[in-house]
Amino acid sequence: QVLVVESGGGSVQAGGSLKLSCQTSGYTHEINWMGWFRQTAGKALEGVATISTGTGITDYTDSVKGRFTISQDNAENIVYLQMNSLKPEDTAMYYCAANSRARWTPSLRERDFNYWGRGTQITVSS
Image 1 (tube, rainbow, N blue to C red):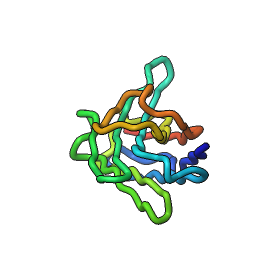
Image 2 (tube, rainbow, N blue to C red):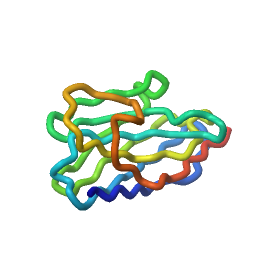
Image 3 (spheres, one colour):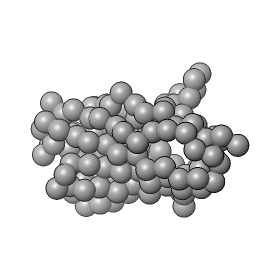
Image 4 (tube, one colour):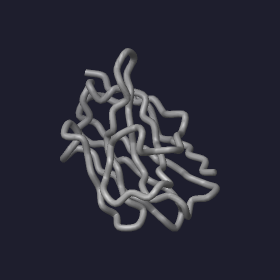
């Protein structure tokens, strides 16, 4: 079992930056991929970024490329999402997720992650 806990949410003006953190605990040695997802009311969950815990391979959804950076501290079992040049459309509940199942390529699909945090709210005002 893996516990996933996000932190770092808050409110910021457009153009600003925020950094989210995701702490995992438990059977962390089983985690192969970590991901960040987001969801706004009435919309489907969207995969934002993912990183391989073993190789460091990353992938991003197109709307955040060049603005968001996912990184990790494997010694501390923490994954970060640095968000720069934030836009009002980035406003959402952000969720961190972990995948302990074998996978060789990055995925931003909800079904490819089996442990989830409770989320942290990001609000970007114009």
